[in-house]
Each structure stands twice: as structure tokens, then as C-alpha cells.
Amino acid sequence: MASRASRRSAIAWRAIVLASLLAVLGGARPLSPPPFHVPAPFAAPPEAHGRSVEVWRTPVDPETGLLLTGDVAVVEQERRLLGLDARTGATRWVSSLEDPGSIWAGGRFVLSEKRGESQEETYSLLTVLDARSGVSLWTAVSGFPADGPWRPYFSLIGMTARHAIVSLPALRSIRAFDLADGGVAWETALPGGCEALPVPEESDDDPDVHGAADDQITVMLLRCGGRTHLLGLSSGDGGIRWDWPVTDRDVTDLSLQEGVTALETHHSLTLVSAEGTVLYDYAAADICVDYCRVEVLGDAVVVARGGDDTETMVEMTDRRTGRHVWTRVFEGSSGYGLQTPGDRLYMEYRLPPPLEHPVLDLLDPATGRTVLTTADPLGDDDGPAVTARHGSLFYTLSQSGEKPVLTAFRLLPGPGDPGWAARGGVPASAWPDACALLPGGPGIRAGRPAPAGLSLPGSVTCELRPASSGPGPVVKVSILWVHPSVGAAKEATGNKGLREPSGWIASVADEALFLDETLTDAALIRAGTILVTVEALGDPALTRRSVTAVARNLREGPWGGGR
Image 1 (cartoon, one colour):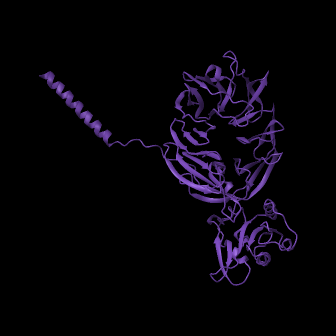
Image 2 (tube, rainbow, N blue to C red; image 1 turned 90 degrees about the vertical axis):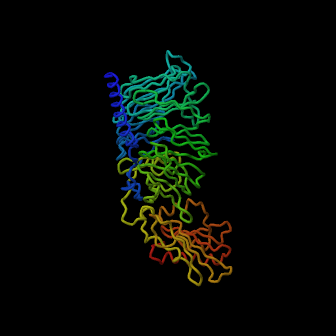
Image 3 (tube, rainbow, N blue to C red; image 1 turned 180 degrees about the vertical axis):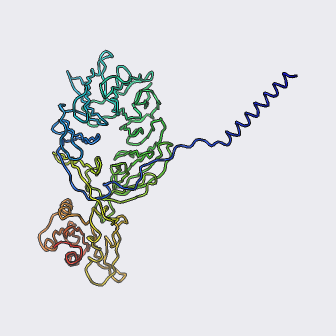
């Protein structure tokens, strides 16, 4: 009996403990993810101030890029690798490497990968330099692709702060070299039955990328039993984190940023986190034919995709959970317009007609709302405005012509005028009201204001319509832009490629050009820094009177418009 009582007591005690534990667990809440974090959209960096001053410039080789590591800017010049002081442009070092090939830079190191050729076979040559001095630290030379394991061929996957990570197809493995001394930091065998995709030929104009690496993750496309897989490894120790089957599509581009892998085809875009979670998977006809762009800021993954320089869809996804957060559509833009200089999120687009100017919206990454509209410092269609940024400087890389130039700029701080940045540093007082430029006389004046980001009190387009409701001639005046200098306005006029005819129109303003093929009823006027169009379609006589009146109003008005 004592034995049974003891057992009953023990059972009761366990029931009490279990009930207490269930009560505690029942009241507990599941662990929530850490707070969502993105860089603050306020306290905008110098890119938001609009008006630029050149600090230094230097010629670079065609098709070169700019790599910043610390305060060293790494470029190619006359097929040599140069380390420039990012603040002054002064040359710190010139590498002894000739024709260095593909360049990576980060932390204390610069990495060169060059494809060599011997007896019609290619091999890879890795060279690591000290980023501060340009001194070569070590070199590794691979075998040829046809060689066996005794002298394995390798190809570079990517560079982290500590390692150069390569693929060794003959050994079916991935190896990490220590950047400091070239020693083997780790080596990982590929999963059974898997092999690396073939290395693209050197002659390919735009070879496919099959792998990438950053400090968090190393990713690589493999072929496993007739299927394509994406393998993710820890960049620190080479441990395999995940093996993800890829839908059988032709991957045209693989990229990696802050641990987020982007797999792109002409008709799909897939994003995978460092943990192997699919964050974004969108498929539609031709979505990335023009361009898709992915940027990561903190926990925000921002995607720009779409169109033919007419419309771009910008979406943000939480990279911790894959949750879609916001979507915005930008007219007059392309995927190239998405930029993240200085850990701020910008979108470039063109203002709606009649205004002819690209601007940048500083966006709040958490909500997608516009915080500030600023002028594009580059101001043309050659590419993104900001190639890179260091401190208070930003850099543009001109690829036009035979002699590309790298230029460093500093931007001037703006006054309290909220539209100053968007107008490229031109005060509102320099902008005429389109309705004030119309010729005098009876009629109804109908104006259209500028976009709110410009903070202009007047209209940018105004029509003089007949007072009666019946048909009649309409005169339309539109302000294209007010430039910060006469030189910039002349350049903008010249870019239109219009022929200046002889006759009365050439004498009414600093420049006056007909816009239409018949040279009768639509004209462009440049008055100092101001560009204006005047139209009276179908009525050449009214056009002549209106152009003359508008030119006079520009000269006599308070805007300082021309002669």
C-alpha cells in the first residue's frame, strides 16, 4: 500500500509540474523578429544639395570601373592599375601589373583575376595587392581546364574581406585562399553527383555569371543529376548552408549583395536570402529585358523592374521575412535609375513635359514615400548620376567618346528654399511664370503648375485661349528649364539638334529655333539661361507675333532673361 501511495504521490506531483509548465508555456508569446531596420531617410547627404563643384578629374581606360576601398580609388590607366587618393586624385601608387584583367577591392586588399592563354588553352592568374601601397602580396596560377586533379584549373567566384574564393571543377570543390598570404583557408567538396557549370569563354561579350561571394555567403550554380541547383556556403568556413533547386530556366545573371542572391532571366527575377529563403519570385514576359536592379539597405530589399524608359515598378521586400511592404511606379524612368549612394535610396526619373530634366527622389526605404526631390548632378542620360561616394565627394565616370574621364565632385549646400536642390541650385525668382510671358490681348489664360518638388509659385505651361467658346487660335508658352549658367543652357539647346534658319526668328532672342518641319508655327527660345517654347499651331502669323512678344517679355521681366 505504501508503494502504491508513493506512486500515486509521484504521479500527482508530475501532473502538478506538467500543469504548471503548460500554464507558463500557454502564457508565453512566440519570439518576434528583431525590429525592422533601414538607414534613416533624413539628414540627406550631399547628393541632395544639387549643385556641384568639380574637385579633380583624371583620364581612365575605356570600359574601366571605379573601386573604392577606404580612401583609395582604384582605376585603370594605360593598362596599369592605379591607386588614387579619393579626396585629391593624387596618385599614391602604380602597380607593376600589366593589363590586370578583372579587379575586385575591399578592406586591405585589391584582387586581380586575369585570363592567360598558352598553346590555345586558357588559365587563370590571381594576384593580390596591398590596397594602401599597391605592393603585390602573392600570385596563384591555375592549370588548364583540361588538366586533371594533379594541376587543377580554378576560376574566381568572388572576394570577401578575408578570402579569395575559387571553384576547382576537376576536384569538384570550392576553395578559399587567405588574402593575406595565399594559404588555403578552407576547401569544401560539392554535394554528390553535382558539378560546377562550365566556365564561360574569355571571348564571350557578356558571359554568364555562375557564382558570387560576400562576407556572409558564397553562392554557386551547379548541375546535379540534370537539374540546376543554387548552392549556398558560409564564406567564413565553407560549411554548406543550403542546396536550392532552381526552376529549369536559363539564368542570364547572378548577383549577390549583402547576403541576398538575385537570379535573373529575361522573364523572371528571384531573390534568395543568406539563409536560403526565397524572398521574391516574379515571372512575366520580358520583365528584365530592359533592366532589373536590386539594392539592399539594412533589412529592405528594393527591386526596380520594367519598361523601356517609360515606366518602372519599384518594390520593397523585408529580407528577414520575404513580406512585401510597398510598391511605387515611376514614369519616365528605367531600372538604372535606382541608386543607393551613401546608404540612401534614390530613384531617378524625368519630370513630366514640358520640363526637360532628370531628377532624383530621395525615398524613405521603409515606406517608399518621397522625402526630398533633388536635381540629378550628372544631368544627362549617360547613366546613373553617382558612380560612388566617399565622404563629401561623389564620382562620375564618363564613358562617352574615346577618352573616358573619372571626375570627383563636391556639392554645395543649399539655402532654405525647399525646391533649390530639385532646380539644380537655381532660385525660384529666376523662373518666369509662363502666363506672364504670353502676349497681351483678350482671351482666357489657363496655366499648369510645376510638380510640387520644384516649389515654384507660377505656371510652367500656359495657354491663351479665345474668350468665346467657339474655335480659334491658341497660343501656348512652355518653360522647358532654367539652367544654372548660360553655358549649360546653350548645351541643352545644342543637344536638340535643331537647325537655326535665317530670317526674323534668329534675331528675336539669344537663340531662336523653329521646332516643326515646316518652320512656321512652333519655336524654341533661349533667353540667357531660360529655355521656352512658343506654339500657335496652324497660324504662322500669330506664331511670329507671339514669339516676338514672349522674347520681349523675357528681356524686360525680372528674371534676367537674355539681352
